[in-house]
Amino acid sequence: GAVVSQHPSRVICKSGTSVKIECRSLDFQATTMFWYRQFPKKSLMLMATSNEGSKATYEQGVEKDKFLINHASLTLSTLTVTSAHPEDSSFYICSATGLGYNEQFFGPGTRLTVL
Amino acid sequence: GNSVTQMEGPVTLSEEAFLTINCTYTATGYPSLFWYVQYPGEGLQLLLKATKADDKGSNKGFEATYRKETTSFHLEKGSVQVSDSAVYFCALLHYNQGGKLIFGQGTELSVKP
Image (cartoon, rainbow over all chains, first blue to last red; front, side, top):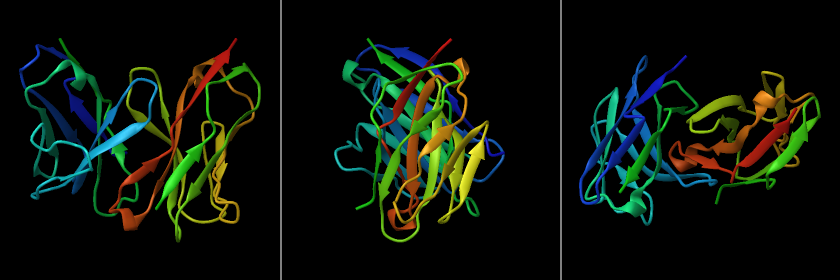
């Protein structure tokens, strides 16, 4: 089946630093990738949609200068949390889909803790 | 717009009990419907899906039938196990949403031995 990986699985950083999270499709070409944020005991909140080679489309209320998304290849998208603060601590999940697929394949998630 | 509503949790059951988690949706046309499961500390795993009316998705003893007349996709399992303890998300995918998934709020299931 289609597999999506994320790296790192956990990251702890100091307030004010930037953190990059990678999302990779391992066995298919991901024309579209999605980034979600999940708060404890809550559903997934879509942050942005990225199509390979294009700028990401951000959902309302998501700061694009804060959460930088790059989708430069058909197998890799990155989310960079810039100048992270404790309120950015969360579980970040990516998903991917490609041509011929009618579903999204999810990564295992990245737990970000900002001290 | 498109939306998904799930029954509120948490749901607590004894092992071997029957499980139903209700899910209803609002959408025009014919969306695809999904159930995802999330175990503690992990990402989402696809449990089952249905792409058209009257389709039944099934996996690992779980079933859900796409009912267009009642706009529902209820999740059922005849005999739950402790290992089924997780959060379950109902979702729809409609192509007028640019391939985005619309999630329900999630239902936490706890199965006691």
